[in-house]
Length: 116
Length: 112
Image 1 (tube, chains in turn cyan, orange):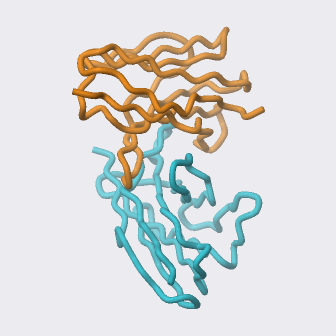
Image 2 (cartoon, chains in turn orange, green; image 1 turned 180 degrees about the vertical axis):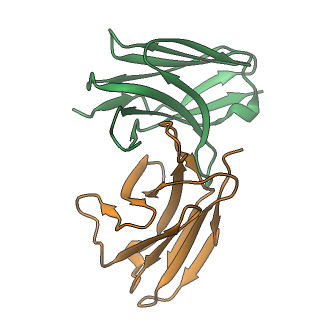
């Protein structure tokens, strides 16, 4: 149980284009989903927290107009990297918490974004 | 000083060894403690979850929490090459919206 999927797993795009990443909780409802960014050999950096039906809460230093997050349902959150640039190239990982309490997060497999 | 400190390693052990991974933290409000395993280019996988102080065992894995010392450990018995990965400790406070604070991760290599 507690499976989280991400799509796509790998994407290459040209500079200036936008990329959408989907995060789905497959076998549970998640009122809260999280988006992380991870650079090579570094730990996870929380970008934002999203709750179903409300606006995402962004961490300090994360541009909300650059990284658009939508949490339209209890099983789906999306991250759109707008006008992507090479410095946005990274490994993006989502996670989800169970709706009925619990402090664990279940992570998706990650999406590797390369911006040319 | 970081809220959660974790030795980044790398830690190299022979197959069959007992591995000890540790984290220290400074925020006494942390009550929920987790260990995640992350293989290269994959998302973290939850290994152990404990609440407050005490021990928890699951197969070859044992998690220990000592809140008085602000110290948590993960022990891996009979380590296998497939255990080679980065191990992340994570913790959260009650009422914190399930937000996790992570250690930097310890890279473990189990050699044949």
